[in-house]
Amino acid sequence: MIYLQLFLSFLQIGLFSIGGGYAAMPLIQAQVVEKNSWITMDQFTDLVTIAEMTPGPIAVNASTFVGSSVGGVLGAFAATFGCITPSIVIVSLLAFAYKRFKGASVMESVLATLRPAVVALIAGAGISILLNVVFGGQTVNFDAVNFIGLALFAVAFILIRKFKVNAILVMCLCGAANLIINLIIS
Image 1 (cartoon, one colour):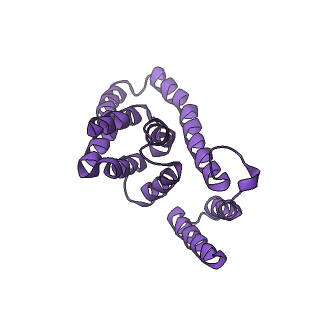
Image 2 (cartoon, one colour):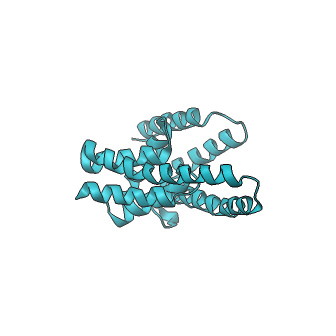
Image 3 (cartoon, helix red, strand yellow):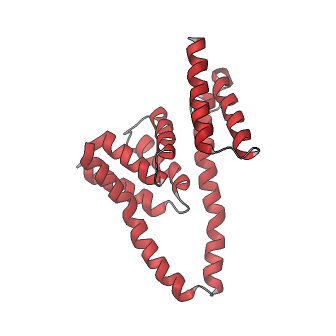
C-alpha cells in the first residue's frame, strides 16, 4: 500500500509542479512533511540540499530519496515513476501542440501567464527553507535566530549573485564553514 501512496503522492507533485524542480519543492514539502509525515522538516531541508547537489532534476532526486527512505528500492522506483509520468505525457502532448501552433498568439499568452505562478512557487520554497534555517521552523521566532545560518546565507547569496561563484562550490564552502564553526563552538 505504501508503494501506491508514494506513486500517487509524487504523481500529484509531478502533475502540478509547473516550472521545474524548485517549483515542486513546496508541493513535495506539503506531501511528504505535512500530509503524510514521511520525513521531518529538518530532513526535508537536508533532502533539498542533497537533491540539489546530486546530478539530475531536483524533483526526481527528491522523489527517489523520499521513496527509498519510506519504502526501500521499490519505494524509490514507485515515487520516481510517479514523479516523471506526468512529465512524459504532458511534454509529449505539448511538443506536439507547440510544433503545430508555435506561431499562434494564444500559445504565447499561455506561456506568459504561467511565468508569475512559477516565480511565486520558487519564492515560496526558498522562503520556507530560509525560515527553517534561520528561525528553526516555519514561524518567525527572534529568540531562536540561528546567526550562523543567517550569516552563511548572506555570504552565499553575495558570492552567487554579486561575484558569480559556482553554486556547488558555495554550498561546499558553506558546509565546510558550518562544520568548522560548530566544531569550534562545541
